[in-house]
Length: 419
Image (tube, rainbow, N blue to C red):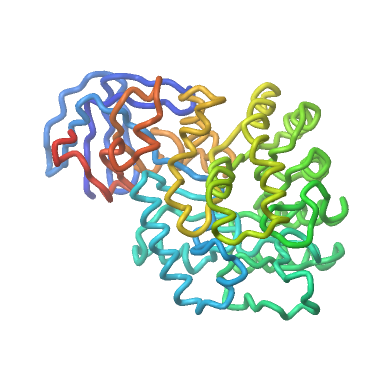
């Protein structure tokens, strides 16, 4: 079995949010087998590969807990007319670029399916480990009901091929249960439900609630029956409170929460996954890209509240996880989330949210998000003093010197005068 030693590294202990100097990590196959928190002279033995970190920061592979790898266009409605083969090809490019930035795992919050996941696992597509939600579940007129206001009937879109951001529409407890069971059947790792209004949808008020309490509880119950969990799109205090009291594990976005809502989240053990970079991107480009006045007005309501929501959540002890939620060419801004988060979070806390806390949310802490024996050897070597400045991660083409996934080097920038 291939054996690799990485030595002379400043290792990020993500569960404690601290760096430890002079560490050595031993890898066999795709897993870490030993972590030595001491200086050790490493020599090639039995054909082992030795990587001298030269004092660079050694991080667990980054986790983005809110992506849409099939969102190849900002025009989500227009993309529904694309051949599914083209959507898959575009997704492979998006995934490869995420991996090259250092994101070795992503949680897809709607759109990707088990086929993309298997393609990555087989090595057909280079990309992060995928945790897929399948189709998001929406009520009629909810956030994932993308039919224009004038369209009637259920047949405006066909999502039968399995890829796309159009939601599964379900009304009533029975339909919700069936919709969740269908996502489980087709291979979802978690269930996405739309618990409130959104920016990109044409007919729902941003601060409204979606689904009845009984419907929300039915979705959570069906997810838990399959040993999965539910995540909920929600912005307003009322929508967030209803969702977490129904049992959802994470709130996506949550820009409009107040302290009382954050206390409910803490009490119920919920995580917050802000997606701040998408609002910055859409504020810059939404009008040029042809977003409607109604959508831009909703964007204006939330874009200035995202940082405040993070502050509120932190003050109440709610764990905050890294997410981005970008679309089309805006995927290129993924690493910019580090710069935005730095305005309200200490650097090591931001790093923890993109590693250990994200793995906890996903119930993957035995395998992902930290550098420990038994975990996948998903590792980064990064330049700079990350305790003070996250700019090397925000500019990965300069700062991320090496990306390893499952014990295999997938990007190496140590040469070309950068070591």
